[in-house]
Image: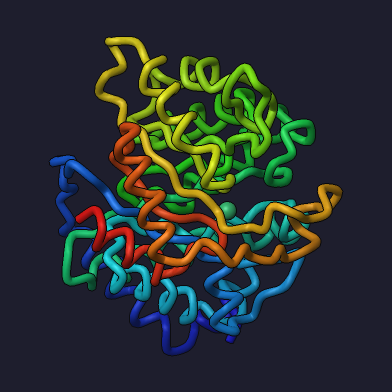
Length: 327
Ligand SMILES: [Zn+2]
């Protein structure tokens, strides 16, 4: 079933009921001491056998089998996730192609946000929805960022999702320039922004950096006036704790309210560095068992994190272990 036929077939009833419920939602402003995020949507859809291939990545499931996106959200809820991230990571020109993005991007992002909202609203525990604002021109590729083209694309993603989400999650942000574009887009709404930088997996001796090579301290300072949380995601688990410590220590007193956190990936260390993020599907390392990931998560909390979850290859069983260990 395609996303167009979903508008005319059975799923539309589900979607309408989610919209109706959303009208009565009062946002929960009490911040818990620790918030458990969900895990990586794309790799879970792949494992589920959902329609999934490059270059569309997870957007293909939205187009052809949106019920499986809902199932994936539900799996993370059952695992104990308190936040669901909309499955818009691949609803960008980079994955869809420019023409298809402008023709169908609003419809797809709207559908993705509704599916996350539905899974959150039917959850047995409080679950918030954050709208993903992903890299627009390729993950981990700060040199490809196009500051002139970015605002209109982000505007589409914000407008399509804003009626369904409780906040925004700028994800896998690889440079300060990307971060500033995300801040500008989210800033047009009243909703909180969580800004998540992608850390460099092989940082210099001088300390942790984001993918662009800009320091964690500079990256944090660039957005600190505009965000409710700063996180790190889609990097190796090994680089996170040091970056969290630097982040916490580097935030000035007036930014004490900013929460910090992380959600790392499970990609193998050894892979062809020349790949493009819309061409290959990377393999996973074997040592990040759920129990090991929970231990890593505990070390992040000790480093100051109050928001923890998982990115690519971190599945519901990892999130369950994390929630059990930290809850
Ligand atoms: Zn990831």
